[in-house]
Amino acid sequence: MPQKKPKNDPQQVYPPRQRSDERQRSRQAYARPEKQQKTSGLRRIWARLRGFQFSRNIGIDLGTATVLVYMQGKGIVLQEPSVVAIDTNTDRILKVGKEAQQMLGRTPGNISAVRPLRDGVISQYDVTLKMIQYFIRKACGNLFFPPRVMICIPSGITEVEERAVLDAAHAAGAQKTYLIEEPKAAAIGAGLNIYAPVGNMVVDIGGGTTDVAVLSLGGVVVSESIKIAGDKFDEAIMRYVRRKYNVLIGERTAEAIKKHIGAVYDHPKAQTVEVKGRCLNQGLPKLVSISSKEMIEALAEPITAILDAICSVIERTPPELLGDILKNGIVMTGGGSLLYGFDQLVTRVTGIPTRVAEDAVSCVAIGTGKSLDHLDMLQEGAINLSRERKVRL
Image 1 (cartoon, rainbow, N blue to C red):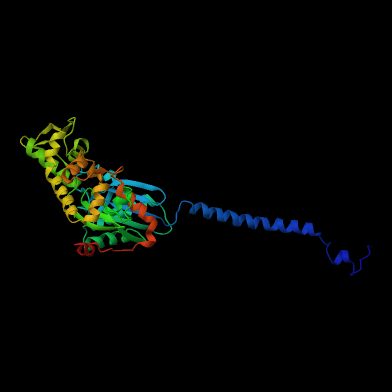
Image 2: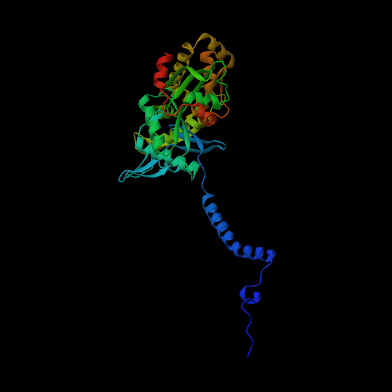
């Protein structure tokens, strides 16, 4: 029989002790799977969150014809027509922007392509809300927090129209909404130092409104806003072609004529363009040829109204600032200022040197974007432009 070992034998009662390095290796062996599991879980969460961004500051040029979105740190990230296609049976929005613009004048009975902004203000609130929401999502993508939005508005806007812009931006997902006057944003985008004690005059001709303003020390001294701009140019061309050639053309055709041969001053080389429309006598398609010299006659009425507004602002400008304007000249911005000879015509009428800004179409959006750097110094919400105009007068 084998002999039993005594109970006090250390080899039988206690297991052999491990050395410190062996204990450390065993702890690492047991701890490694838990750390790997935690790390892999964090990587999965980070992979899901990589597509999201935190809140951004964006500026929106909510124009009657075109909407431009400026993102802080990136510049202009979106430029699309302010057109929305709606299904009239269900009130459902089908297309927004460029795709909707292609439907203008070509839609069936149950689809309507509309422009929810008229004369620089909101004419269809619900459609404008959806359009702003679409452009914010397209420009910003996925965001953890809603963006802070700055929107430029005409200087002649009323309190009701101003409140409609704020409500639409807030309902579209803006965290905070700031407003800025279009002539002020246009001056900043054109590179003018409006914060100096020097007078600067800006003429912004957009799609729905023309804003004429004199700025000094960061504010508007004298201003005037009229609802005559690019849309009225198109209507004037349509009336001229109908009156002279007895041919009916659409808005898109009139806009194409304006862009190709639109002029308000004698062109050294006359240009022509062929226009297709419907003959009002026969009801059949007809092709006519229009020259750039005819555009001077066609656009005479709206151009005269804009010149009257410019002269009116000059008459109400203080003499000290008028001397600065005579030295620095008048700066024209907006798509309407690109008509051939517009700056030469203003120079001849007013006697003040006039020039067109380098990037006239995007000046308002660029100025709105540059103002995003000073959001903490600006007032959120309504700025009561109608009350300020009464004080200026």
